Length: 337
Image (cartoon, rainbow, N blue to C red; front, side, top):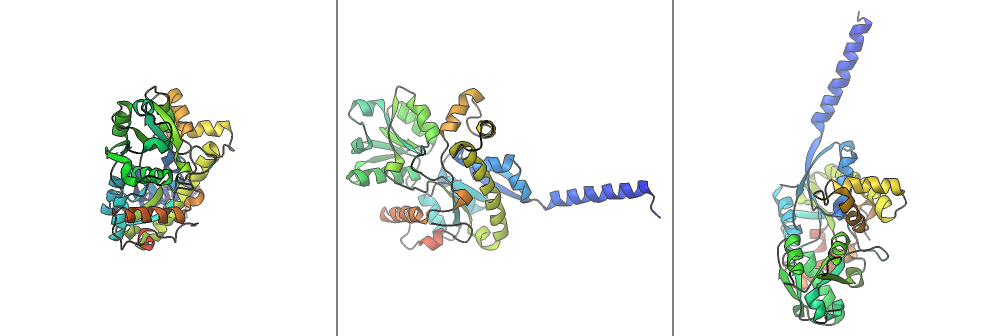
């Protein structure tokens, strides 16, 4: 017959064994991200244990632009990505490698979104608003990037040909910033935490807003491999559930601003671990707050915007004509509208 001491030891052993088994069962995933405030929900879900609650062990892999992340998803180096829809991503979807499974960053009237910048040289030469960008150079990362899409949307609304805004691929965001500061390009568009910081420079000024040219723009999307979407649906659902909790915390704290100042400060400090981490908190905090844009609740997806982006890529002959919206998007995981 077991005595009390042996029974207690047995119970401890069972508890430790159970914890060890749970740890062993945690599914490892890699998430692709950019060091932008707009990627905060992933960081929140990680730091606050929401991924862990879903049995997911997360590792982040950081990128400089959208298209390399799409390639990493297709190759299996990364399991989930959150970034803009690019030509490369769409072509990979056309080959059956990638699926968009949700939405993230979204332009919303009344909330600061992406801003259009111009160099001092361009402004001195008469560029006062985006309508003056005809014949001017516009910085982009790669051909077929979201920056490229924005440039052409500006041209279309202002009534001049796409070719009349001269896009200049510079591969990385840092290179675009450098080119704008040194007056090598005339204009660019970027999220508010970067745009507002650059606007403080005497060499760069904000001249417009992307939301005036692309209302309800689904700026970034959540995507994974087609294999995950088809064969690992439970994994995708777990990821989206944790990610959505991160979205909710982020929106309440910094976008809707209904969680109170204490929670807003906690949120900024959390994000600072990943965004502007090389700067002291006091200097980074205003930029992080300035970068607060709406992330779609529950990762819902604006299909009208995604369809418009797909059409533009096709019209510009950057993706294959046979690629359909069903090849690009799996609508089974989140609400669409």
